[in-house]
Image 1 (spheres, rainbow, N blue to C red):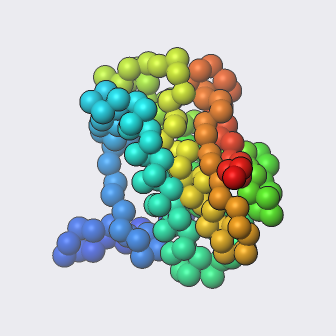
Image 2: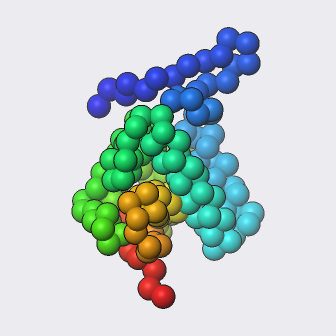
Length: 179
């Protein structure tokens, strides 16, 4: 896939934008090493919980902005989200299944940044789920779709398989939260 991202760089400020949203461009090892150190300092459970909340809010905001920018509606926004994530070096994301009427989805991730970086530039190798950072993103995007299409459910997402555990790819499962 050849990324066709509209990247604009402000000559005066150096700020990068794509579709009007400010972006940061950093080497993969830099981001992953900082991620690993934050997890070690805070503890995985607390760090994962914070990442989930922040990722959820960020995905929701992104979907809202991209819907306005591109005139996309409903599930098309979520599909666009996965495409853009795939174009930005995080890995290759796709729906294995999705049902916007019920809030269920299975998102596959091939070539995860977190799995590919293991053992390089000081990043430790883990036999555990390495890609949990993404979980909140998928429930945030699904909940945006739900609200935009008049649904009342809220969802939860979790990494149910990780390539870091030896699977062919990662899988994230999005399900409605039962009341």
